[in-house]
Image (tube, rainbow, N blue to C red; front, side):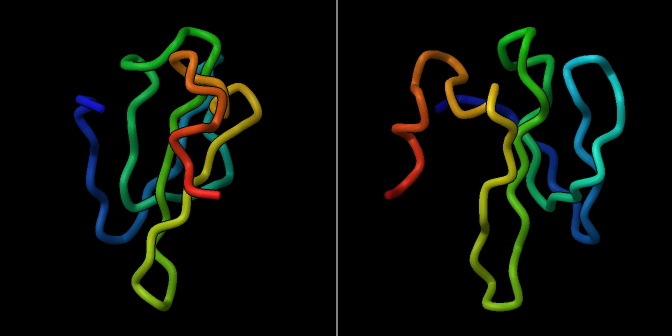
Length: 73
């Protein structure tokens, strides 16, 4: 999708659209300044099985007009 991501081996907190730190931690982060101004950071956390799971807010589900279609069912 062309976004530059931050990689954090130990995980890092996500940032909300108001600049606040969110409680969620992610290993791969799409930074808020690349997204719609009403969105939070979008993160992906690595589970014990090695798979990444998306961490995003309600506003993140519809970012860039995709309405969650970019996530697998």
